[in-house]
Amino acid sequence: MKVILRNPRKEVEVSGQRRVKDLLTELDILPSTVLVIRGNELLTGDTVVGGDDILEVRPVISGGGLRAPAGPVR
Amino acid sequence: MKCRKCGGRAALELRRHNAAFCPPHFLEFFRKQVAEAVHKHRMFTREETVLVAVSGGKDSLALWDVLIEEGYQTAGLYLDLGIFEYSQESKAKCLAFAAARGQKLVIERVADAVGAPIPEVQKATRRPTCSACGLSKRYLMNRAALEHGYQVVATGHNLDDEAATLFGSVLHWQMDALPRQSPALASTHPKLVRRVKPLYRLSELETAAFAFLRGIDYIVEECPFSKGATSLAHKELLNRLEESSPGAKHNFLFGFLEKARPAFARAEAVALQECASCGQVTTGAVCAFCKLADQVKRRMIE
Image (cartoon, rainbow over all chains, first blue to last red; front, side):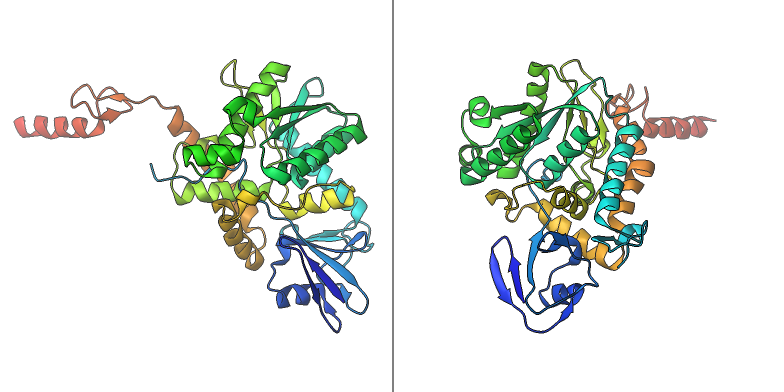
């Protein structure tokens, strides 16, 4: 199956079948930090993927911007 | 994995709620969480028009989408930071979102107000980019709301944002920041509009899932200046904690809001003055040390 990673964009070929949660562990990705997308559906960790599947692993974490700066100790 | 409500195939597992939902029931869950936030903190009414600060990202567009669907009167506010292609793309996403839903979008250019776009501000001031950017955004959001006649500004801050900010504030014991961390900041001055965060009960994963399931076209790429941001490091720490202890972020933030924040707010509300005896800072007329010393002195005489 083909796995598309974002930020930076990268494509990885993975052979065999495995659960989404195991795939993320192999890729060293915390499950709570990404959506795993196949076509127009979201996949939960127990979904078995493989074969001709094309998966997008889309990060959900954003930072900077409006958050209050940690700043120096006052 | 099955949906907790209907037994259908789940699209998202929410470990901190020990639940999973199919798309329709997840969207229902999400909207209920927003409604709960708005109701609990009396963020705004249906009679008020809400200015929603949008960046083109998942959180702010998801928030705007929910408020429109729930029938609130809204307008969007896009602050053009002038950050190269990132700003061009994010502005295009906001314009397309507003046009598709027939909503008004107010656009303000940071360069017009500050004198230079954010990348130049950073060079000129040597202030950390996110710091200068955040300061500019807070200032311009308030000014735009006043100029355009809105009583309330809503931002897309989510549970992860709030937990990471709290973590940073606690790590440095920022006593001025802690009382101000709240899902709703009331207007305490005629020229200060109310600021609310209706997504504070929802995680970043949940806002992303909502945006995806609603077909919202948001900018997935991150701001080029956010790389290495302190808030991202704090989020990573909290996410690792969450992985082994689901609900940790929720408990950290909600425990603070319910149990600790009132104490910090009280501390901030107390007026400080100089001790009439020694001149040191105290909350009363005479400081506790001087009272103790006075007691000791009187005992010695007796």
